[in-house]
Picture (cartoon, rainbow, N blue to C red):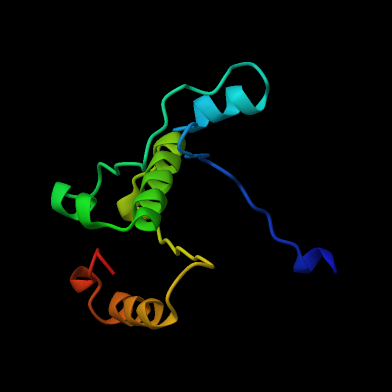
Length: 115
């Protein structure tokens, strides 16, 4: 690898979510050994950027991805509406993924939030 092949990467916002570690601040303290995890367990995140009807219907993976991305944007003081984004998963349906990618190119406002 030459110097011309290298890329610089910057992390501007960090986020984390797990049922007993619902946020980066809580997770960082627990993982560093400075705090105990909360006793309560959350079933799933509730991403506020989705309208309530979509929030209820969204699969857990979608709710998690949107919540974590939104919190990372908050941590970086960036508006998510102005950022190009790509979400990827190893637990997806190739047919649905293909459909969503095509819709994002053709008519992004008509993409189904439940798919």
